[in-house]
Amino acid sequence: MPVTPYITANLPGTGGGIKICPDDFQVEEIPLYPFAGVGEHAYLLIEKRGVSTYTAIAILAKAIGRRSVDFGYAGLKDAQAVTRQWISIEHEPSSRFENIEMPVIRIVEKTRHRNKLKLGHLKGNRFTVRIRHEDWDKSPSMIQAAYDRAAAILRALSASGVPNFFGQQRFGMRLDNHRLGMALLKGDAKRFMELWLGSADESVDRGGVLQARRHYDAGNIGAAYSAWPGHLRAERGALAILQKNPSHHAKALQAVDIRLRRLLICSLQAHLFNKVLELRLPSLTTIVDGDLAWLHETGAVFDVTQDTLSVEQQRCDRHEISPSGPLFGYRMTNPRGMPAEVEAQVLSKAQITPDDFRQAGPQKAKGARRSMRFSFADHKLSMGKDDRSGYLELAFTLPAGSFATILLGEVIKAPLTATLEM
Image (cartoon, one colour):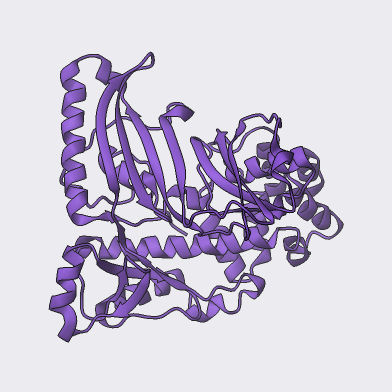
């Protein structure tokens, strides 16, 4: 699988790996606004280990007898990490969360606010990551050399900005969320079920899930239903429909939560954005005539013309603005000139039109723009050693929506992210 291209490809990486253990990857949310301390909504800062945001909320919901959908959250956090994030729940006293014991989750802090916490209500995230390599214990000079390489890459990235690729987390454990999104976009329920219930892959599927997928691939829907783990209710619900009539793929699709379907369309948008960014990567630090420039202070975009190009390039050099790329949709603002040609090329290759996003029923997407690069702040690089191995520790703050694995991939030059195909 091809690795996502690096803007610092001319600089050698440190090598090594991340997430050797959960404590090696720590994340803490930075809220978008201060909480009022009063209101109908209980706000909880939870620390979770080794589970996804969805799983953590499900565990907490079960502990207090509420539904997962009742909880609000600002962003999804990596499962293979120690993460702290805020979640909210309406009409629950803060005292309700005292003395609750839950596996892999700890309530760190409680407060209250007037509104439900919603996706995107997030200023950024603070990361502390340890990079490990088995060879770094052999000689102090080896870890020093890795430190020097990391420092050189971070200096280069501070000057250029980091390519704002979507990380692999956006595409799911099987790296096929964008394909599922494409099936939804095209109204191909049969293809969706082939991917969602079948397409067995021994490299990622395990146990009952692997067996169930194999049965589905072989056309044995009854056996697939029996093998699919009981807690995966949506999959079993779809299979129950298909047991009655194997051709009712569209009806079976209704068993899939609408929020998940919308997320899968977002994954398709992310995939297409990454393709555009790959083509624009060599000129990432350059604003061109026709660009829709992203204003980092506000998230607004504006048209760059030949008359304003010189002034806007100076602002780009100061990281005040950056070129923007497409989250394709039926109402997305389009650039002109070369940027428009690049975006049209990506859509054409995918055999998609903007209007397809209008025809996608309840999953339809208006579209938006996204900055093609991001900056990191307050970074600190150090060396250390513990009972596992020597390590480099890198701490940094990223704006909301940017992926730490993209920055870390530049530093390590290891396949932390990949270029995906349809």
